[in-house]
Length: 280
Ligand SMILES: NC(=O)c1ccc[n+]([C@@H]2O[C@H](COP(=O)([O-])OP(=O)(O)OC[C@H]3O[C@@H](n4cnc5c(N)ncnc54)[C@H](O)[C@@H]3O)[C@@H](O)[C@H]2O)c1
Image (cartoon, rainbow, N blue to C red; front, side, top):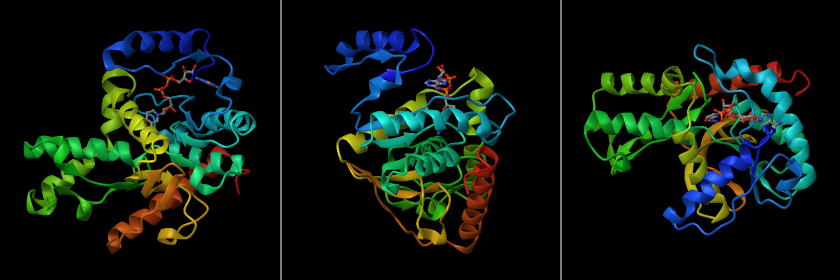
């Protein structure tokens, strides 16, 4: 069920997708609607409504406007799909995930945000290009803020099990980390918005939940003491399955990464306050 406030948009997208479905052998239903009540009974609700970044603006700039929009949608989710899992996509996604968790009152496993998996996809694609190897063989995790304070975990990046540090110089890895941070804005600068990469990872996350795949990835979650953090939503490695966040995977980080993670959490907390001064 696709829902959008703009008259005809979700219905048009649904019709376009239905026409594509024979090509991918999809026999499920796809409908469009302008009415949030049509989410009734959903197992998973994916929130993508909201303003997107413009060239030169940051995700945090969207905080106040999108918090209001997300808040009214979360109220309707609680009303029409009280048993669902919520996946936030709307930016700034870490702050929006925290506010959705607080406002819904759902158990923490049922609210998460799409973030680290997308950053990792971009990181992996740049590494693969640099090495001239298949993108599929490059594995890596990105945690922290979905923004300037994202942290690609170099010590946990491998190519078919080979540590990346054996294959690339520190300098090359650093350049790719910098490029990963600006990767979303690089696309926005060229074509106005991002679509294919976010859509691909949203599909992976939905599949993990709906089929109970227990996939391991970075996502925005509300820690309850893991990594020494609480009262925030931040990108951490998780196992994503039929209950949503099955668990947070606690990894050993080096001192620098620990400091960066703390900085990321502090920055997200200030975005949360900016988005909703009453969130405390
Ligand atoms: N987490 C991520 O990695 C990630 C990736 C891409 C985009 N985003 C974010 O997702 C959001 C959407 O981006 P986009 O490029 O699809 O923007 P878009 O402008 O193409 O789409 C947003 C849609 O939301 C709809 N909308 C607005 N208010 C609504 C409401 N109350 N109920 C239902 N629909 C409503 C609008 O009509 C519009 O069609 C932005 O905040 C963007 O920054 C996040």
